[in-house]
Each structure stands twice: as structure tokens, then as C-alpha cells.
Image 1 (cartoon, rainbow, N blue to C red):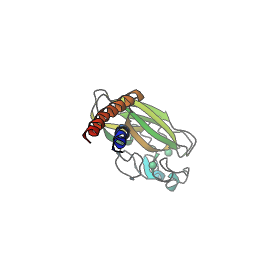
Image 2 (cartoon, protein in one colour):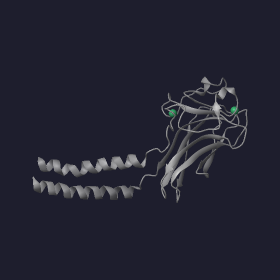
Image 3 (cartoon, rainbow, N blue to C red):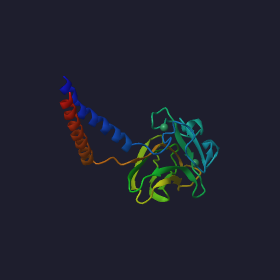
Image 4 (cartoon, rainbow, N blue to C red):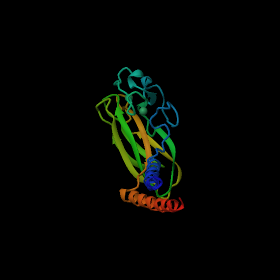
Length: 218
Ligand SMILES: [Ca+2]
Ligand SMILES: [Ca+2]
């Protein structure tokens, strides 16, 4: 009985270690990227109130609550949580959303964001940057209330420490250019399957030796 339990130890420990490593590898570096904590943890050049004109934002469960012409729909996270909705600026280079995140050097990351439009005309052209370097850009859908995911891979290279993740809009018109974001994330790219198998075998080998030693002891 005792040896049977000892034989299970390496498998249980390796499973726990893999689950831990997996959770670390996929941790989101963006604070409040799902906006469930409300209007905090980001900087912006916009002011509150999408119904009051251009260069405005609201953290909200439904854009229609703030603008009579907006499509009515829920957030991406759960359908009943918060998103951030924008009535885009007409002036150039206005920060839509930004947050400093801490990068490790020579590490591969994935940036992901969900985008929707709350008004069909002249969809937003949205650019994403990290540390002043472009990650890419997307044009939001002209179909309203549809969440679409966009993601970009990047490597930090020699850069480490705080880096500004920033989002700007380049459509810059008042009639239209109305969009919302949700579930913004930056996470390290998980190790390839081969690396996971290698780590797993190391863990199993080490704990098998330990189990054998304990078996001899008992
Ligand atoms: Ca959300
Ligand atoms: Ca607008």
C-alpha cells in the first residue's frame, strides 16, 4: 500500500508542477484588461462621456447606456461585465488607452485584444504599440456589436522593465469611428510542447529517485 502511494507521487507532483508552470506562462501582464474593476489602471487622453462628443470614453456594460445611436450589446468577457467604449478623437496622436507593463529581456510575448464597433460608419483604424514600437494595426468591423479578436506576437529583445503599451486611433472622424475594447492581454508565449515534455520527464525522473529512496527507508 505504502509503495503504491509512493509510486503515485512522481505523477501527481509532475502534474502540479506543469499546471503551475502553465499558469505562470499564461499570466496576463495587463492590469484590469477585462475592465471588471471599472475605470482604473490605464491612462488616456480622452474624457468621460461618449454621448457628449468626440474624444470621449466610458467603461460600461453597454454603449447604448451612454449614446442614443449606439448599438446595444454586452462585453466580451462574460456578456454582462464591463468593456471600454470610445467616441474617437478627431485630433491626431491622442492616446486612446495606455498602461505600463513590465517586460523581461529576450522574451516572446503575445498581445491580444477584442474589438467591436458600436456605430457602423467609418470604423476605427486602431494602432497598437509597445515601448513606442508598432505591434500592428486593425480596422474595426462595420458590423456593430460583434467582438473580434486580434493578436500580435513580439519579442522584448534587449528591452526590460516598464514599457508603455499604447493604443491610438487614426480614422479621426466625428460621424462614426466609434468602437469598444475588452480583454486586453499581454502574456508570455508558452513553451513548445517538446520543452514541456522535457521538463515533465526531468520532474518524473527526480521524484522517482526520491520515491525509491523513501521506499527503501520505509
Ligand atoms: Ca469585460
Ligand atoms: Ca464618433
